[in-house]
Image (cartoon, rainbow, N blue to C red):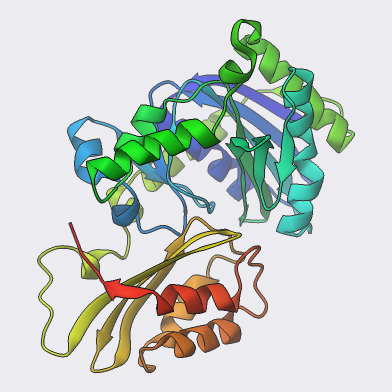
Length: 353
């Protein structure tokens, strides 16, 4: 197992490193594990999210907080130096996402337990201590590489997480803070004065992955060519055109003619939040985005869904039937036809702020 301990790097590089490596790896290349933390905090939205509906863009820009988009599903998150991020890259792996979670999340669970924390894997992809979450994970295929990412949650800034998210009111934000405090935990919260150093926690994590993979640890460094790829990938992932992609038709100032309406529907599925936003013109789907913090392979399925739905009667049953048609060969853990039906059924006029 090739192991890259990058320590602290710039915020964009901490996110782009596994993207850059995954694109370069080929079947037969060594399994690679990366550990890294950002030097400065930033926000990252999931690959399938509509960024402007999930984060407070104006606040982030006024405070100079970088916002990026990763090519892995999941939700918008606050990332900072108090989290040790790990990236496991499996070139040419044929594991399904569910099998990947079952087999490989044994490692971070084992690491937490060795540190004195009674963590467990709660399907689909959460790590928990009792009722509290101590880490989410995500998976995607990038290039020819199956990627699994997560973090050791040493500490977490609940106030900042609540501030960068877009919420309907300050009262709602107060409830969000309370919910985060009630249902999240960290190494510091669990261990207090017995909290291990970053070096100790990282060592335990890497050894746990080596045991699960049954491979020796081979420390290494990024090559100059790899560093160049990391920098180039960072520019792409943090480009506002990529972060706020395909959102022009739901932004303020867009004139909507007679017979055209914007709708939004939201529902919660075992695989994550589902948000459907669509434009209806003369009773038919004129544009559609199905977004959320779920995971889907291949990710192109959502674009196929959008194209297939355009021009069809704008109703929930039509959307659900279209989902059946295009997602039959996709991997959608915790996301079914009924969840898509619910998202399009709970529609309300889209309010753009």
